[in-house]
Image (cartoon, rainbow over all chains, first blue to last red; front, side, top):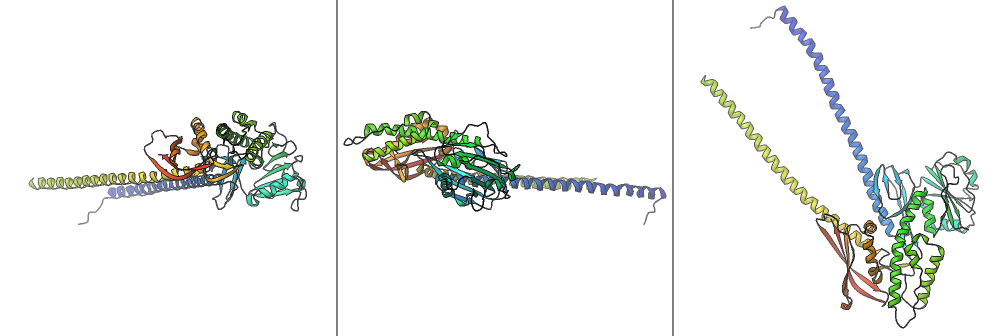
Length: 335
Length: 165
């Protein structure tokens, strides 16, 4: 039996429908927006986590590569196809897109900051004259190195022969590709580092305002000086002695003096411990050398162990001579 | 009235059934979680053990290239050769500068046991830096040749590296 509604009941139901329907629509809209927002937030979080994971992976891989490069001297290692990352090298460690990693005791000379997909690692040993440690230079093909100096200069020639060709873009001025340093034009590289060898530093006008750094090398006094970034002017920092080519390579690839000096301190610290060991060995051998030979152990290691940063060419030469003398006497060598 | 009572009892039984199912499900879930956690613990323990073994191998390879122990002849490093005098003299220096050498050798123990000839037999504790709260350790051993420069002869020895975890 169909029940007929009165007019009031009919109106009541009609009004109820009018309120209910829009309310349902609004509720669906709001609820749907909230659910969509939640999904979007999760998506962004997921992307962020994925970026962090990628950075950690790159940092771990780079640490392994630095370790393996450090163990074998005179090694050149190109790393290509990295995800594009901002990598910053300091004295105690490096960071990849903000993910920090410590070197521990490794001596690594690298740029303060570089955004790249390719890196180049090069290790070289430091001997004074006994082997102390391996040092690592890190750079990227996105950095241009301009060596300004007389092409017949022996230091320029040594650097041309020793620095791996694929290390980065190396330009020697003057040369076929660079007739005059002052006329050099920016080449689209992310950064440019100028190395002035036995010549007055001067900023090529076309590089004004660009991201540049500089180093001045004087072989007559055997010193190097870090120049002001962006202007290549003189800084308040005193010049630093060059004790061996590794120190010069380190200064070429470390674009700021703090990183360079800090790495040098690490190197001197290692030198101090080794000097102690060799000094003790020298004393032991003096007391226990073969009786049928007259062995003279007189290398100036005492001074070096107390103050490793007093190292200079004379001390190195003196240690070398002591060892050669022992070789001539057929005595056990210090190193 | 009796029909009403019957319906109520039926509902109570149904509710009881549901509660029982839920309880059983919860118990099974908890058991499953416990088994899973135990399995994961075992797997993690194995992974950590493997990592410590890798660490021990890495350290033993690093030691082979340490200038503190490696033989050299006029600055030319000799591979697979350990200088006996340098090892003896380096041991107290490494002990005095543990913080520095932690960066190279980490939490580990390095022993060099001289074996042959028997007259030279002895064990040198080259480096020992135990990790606070160590729960386990893994060891690798490798035969090495130790050179005695004052006597110009070699001694057969074993390098033992323990990585702490």
